[in-house]
Structure formats: C-alpha cells, structure tokens
Length: 152
Image 1 (tube, helix red, strand yellow):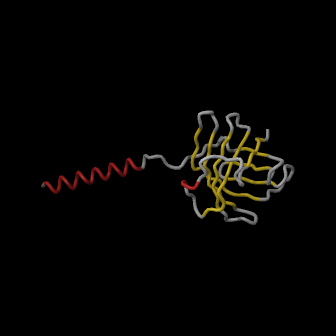
Image 2 (cartoon, rainbow, N blue to C red; image 1 turned 90 degrees about the horizontal axis):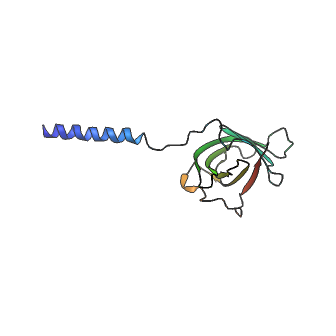
C-alpha cells in the first residue's frame, strides 16, 4: 500500500512539473503592429532600403528601386523596452532569394523611443538560432552595424 501511495505521489508531482513547464516563458509571439515593421532607409548603406513586415523582409539596392535584391523571413525571438523607452528585438532571419538564399543569421536591433531610428548588428551566417550568440549591445564600430531611418 505504501508503494502505491508513493507511486501516485510521484506521478502527481511529475504531472505538475510537466504542466507548469508548459507555462514558462517561450518564444515571443509577434503582433501585427510591431515597431520593427515598416520601411527603413539610409542613402549611405547597402542596401539603401529595407521593408520589414510580419514574417519577412525585402531589401532594395537603391531607394528608388522597384525590384528587391533580396528577400527572406524574419522571426522575432524576443522583444523588450529599456529604461529610456527604446524597443529592442532579437531576430532570427533566413534569406530566401538572391545569391545568399538559405543563409541564416540573427541580429540585435534597437528602435529609438520615437520609432524613427533603427540600429542593428548581426551575426552572419549561423547554422541555427542560438540565443547565447547575440551581441550584448549595439556597437557602431561593429562591421555589421546599420543605422536606418523610418521612411514616412
């Protein structure tokens, strides 16, 4: 009888752990109006224009180009606000067209409190998403640093 009670107790504890484990923090679920989404431009960068939307992006060589030079998927893994009101993202991406099709990368992105400036640094290429491989901060001296402005 004691073994039966012990077995049921252990089973109940295990069931509770499984149920509580499913309630822990998981991957961020993106909303339709994320600050990241929109058209971002910079005449001094390449590409000059990036259009980010739910689930993906399109890059354009020049501001006036109608045809994209690269497209891909974007998967927001985490989002938070800092003490100054800036919005931060950790994003995993995959290039789906052009010469780098199939290449995976991840980037850290900061959208200014005003929503008008976007800075990012990336790690390129990666074999799979790794939360431990994100840069800890955005450094303008990083070779992958990009500064873009929201196109109104």
